[in-house]
Length: 170
Image 1 (cartoon, rainbow, N blue to C red):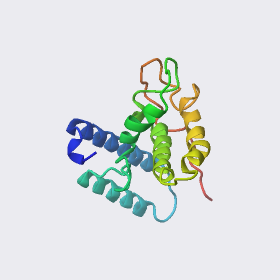
Image 2 (cartoon, helix red, strand yellow; image 1 turned 135 degrees about the vertical axis):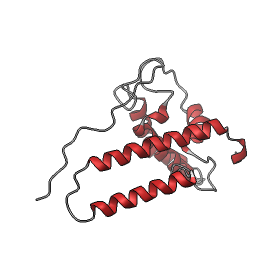
Image 3 (cartoon, rainbow, N blue to C red; image 1 turned 180 degrees about the vertical axis):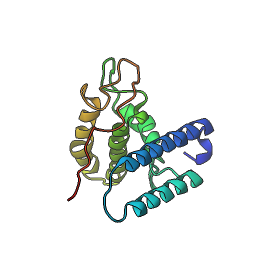
Image 4 (cartoon, rainbow, N blue to C red; image 1 turned 90 degrees about the horizontal axis):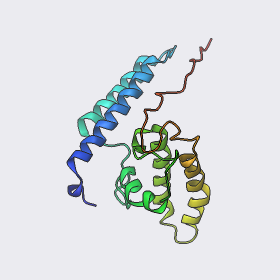
């Protein structure tokens, strides 16, 4: 699909979502107590990467120019949702899947690996299904899995991060 066919409002929403995720990642990194040399340099490098993304509007979730789908969003909307169609009357899916970092991670991995597997005319998709897609889909659709906080048609905010204590290297 040519870039001109994209809905500007959808692109803006995706960009806003990316900025929100990047802000959350930056805040999380700032909370870490990274004792030792290089803490400031690492944060500066991350801040520069974030600034570059903000300035260009580049989406790091975008794929290779030769791929069939331009982004994970396109792949989920046009391929995954059709080929994995199922009743979702209970927990096990959220229509706002893109607001779940774990779902975005799993679906991005599925999409990127699918783009490579589809080019193998022999066993590519079969291997992809059994080795990658099926295990990741089980996690996505498991009632105690990725979307466990969402209910029937209702999205609920997921926790920001796992609780943890930062290891102190002595």
